[in-house]
Image 1 (spheres, helix red, strand yellow):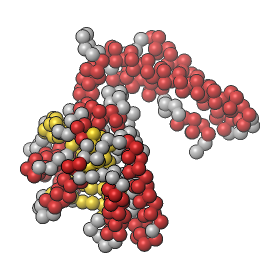
Image 2 (cartoon, one colour):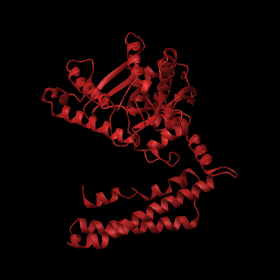
Image 3 (cartoon, rainbow, N blue to C red):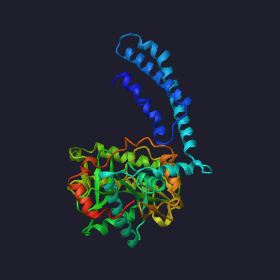
Image 4 (cartoon, rainbow, N blue to C red):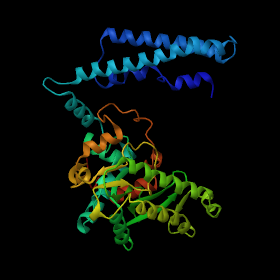
Length: 392
């Protein structure tokens, strides 16, 4: 990657990124448009200078970069950040109605965004149907679950799916997941799969249809009971997990895992991987980091799950999650944490700010395959030929 490409990663790809709110809301005044032009002119001149140096034309980048170019870059990034904040402030003020709070205006904006369309929307509706059936199973059998991550954010901010989201995340305590696995073992319609992921070392647990042509699934994340809300214990818990991963990576008997990084738990050899998780679970229990429900005042993100470093809180007080509440999600009542705002902010911070992942959100399903072909046919059959079984 050239030097100029690295610099451009720090800055908007084009001046259009400075006008997103302009397109979505109202035209900005002449003064702000002038500020945009000035900043873009600076940016163009800076790119020209850096490109010259990057090509070796000036042969003096080494001694001029830190003294001249780097301070300009830092100042330009600060100017762009401030300018972006000003544009959003002006736009929100123009969008807000008389007597309406800023938060209410933002919520109204997100609720007004158009739904996904085509195969993407069909997939979302299929997941809603699966969620509805999952909820029925859990209610009938006294199993606890709650919407998590982007699914919870979508419920609170959009009333359903985030328009560009294509998966469902749920939290469950370990014993309820174990019960769910047993319940679906002989279920002709549903199944729970457990796959060991080598890339992000974890046990990926999914609830889905037995008909593999239907591409809908629910990701289930495991929580264990903890004796108290203690964030120092979280670090000890994470250290135990890191130790487990190091042991797994150094075990030559697990070389077969390198050939196929997604390894189903029901295939030969998977028990060797699972043994490390079982041993780590025994370790954190022996350290007093997890306990039985009767002695618990908190829940903690399990060693089974991935740890991508984005989780601001690995532990919640039991009263922050329970008792669970019901909330509408695409026309279906589902469970959310008791203090759902705290849970959302612990992951996303200010969840009413304009998101950055509209065009870069990770795709869990090949979206092109949803427009025509077997996946679309299976989804439409499952939802009903006269239209979706559940509409948002």
